[in-house]
Length: 77
Image (tube, rainbow, N blue to C red):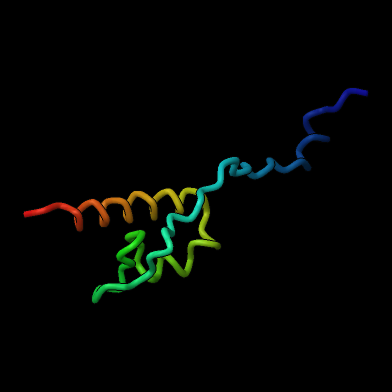
């Protein structure tokens, strides 16, 4: 059987599936500083709370930002 274009117009394009999943950066050294940033993983309290519901692209952004915070904290002046 051959489908015409009009028969295919009812089909919707599938949403892309996120294939990778990011592991939580938690290092079990949980303690918030005066800016509500964890001294262990570098995430803000808000980032910690939304981690489980975040998309992979949001998790990637959180990981980049938290790594930058940890690295800037470890820089000696």
